[in-house]
Image 1: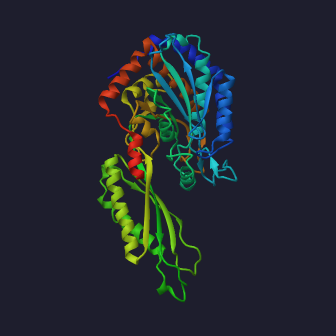
Image 2 (image 1 turned 30 degrees about the vertical axis):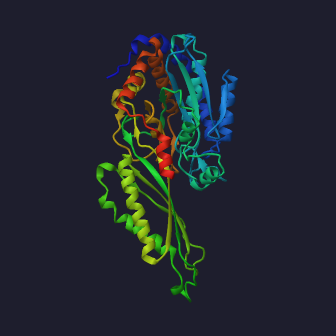
Image 3 (image 1 turned 90 degrees about the vertical axis):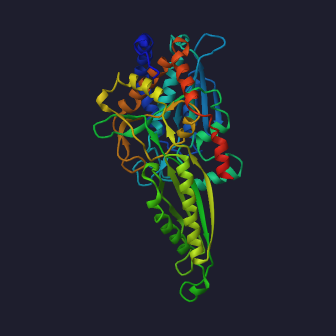
Length: 445
């Protein structure tokens, strides 16, 4: 096991923690402003402009337009001209979700930060400001890269399909687009966190794994006819769709429990008029699972079920499978470093080791390429993506997150970045070289 050395770095940590304490009100205010201006994926123009202005005013050169609305800023730490230390990226997601019933939702778009990405983004920029003014920066080997990531939420697929068809994007997830553009080519380690509704009696959840998924567009085509006078002349595409859904349900007992398969379709178009036999019905679904072997197996069963629905009534079905996200696997060695620093701010009994989670995030794609972590820090209440989600502990959400990440960075980058280098070496030894984009290209084809 790679071990952190927190005590040896006490002097450096003390200074950076004081800086974060002083910046705390600004970090929280940044998060509030982002919250009050929610934007959906690949549309985060105001959010990106707001945050990049702060970075530029703090002396950073900022590269914008990554994945349409993403950005990055770099901070060289060591005085070593060859800069042989690790390049550690701190990520902040920029987008919101849609929840029209949330009291703070944008009345026009339904967008609201009911997932806490506003906290991530504010902490990321706050850390950039803290480290840029760090008097002992030259004692840290390597480079820090701060990346504002668009479009983590896999929503508005029709809009993203339009962007893809027009050549503006190739993949539907923001991190995938940044991978495609080479943003992570020189990154060695990735750190980020996610806001979470406090588990019972806990403040932080970390480690564990999570599902990946692929998505499907489904279009059933039948034949219109008068529903009352001549239904015998029609082919009911809605009936075909309903049969397909039932056939999916009948597959569920064949999914192994430890594969954590989740299939959850919605009908996006069910017909035109009540007195016309539906001839054009559309639906969308994810197929989630713990491994890609299990996802691809379930995907075949879902396709077969959808085709059976069409065959049953003589309709046609078109199924388009598109890339989703890779399953997640947190780097255990990085988790240990993060946890050792977290214990400075959160008592051990309030930290929960996560088991497998059935949600998904595009951080999974990164985790198959680089050592990365994605802990869940409390500070919110209510269900994520719901009308009752809100921040109820800004100190925990913003300040504890920022301090823990900053202390983790110190541990990784002192002593010539020796701890980071050990973690990177171990990751490469234990993980095959995964070509994420090549895999997704196969799914598209």
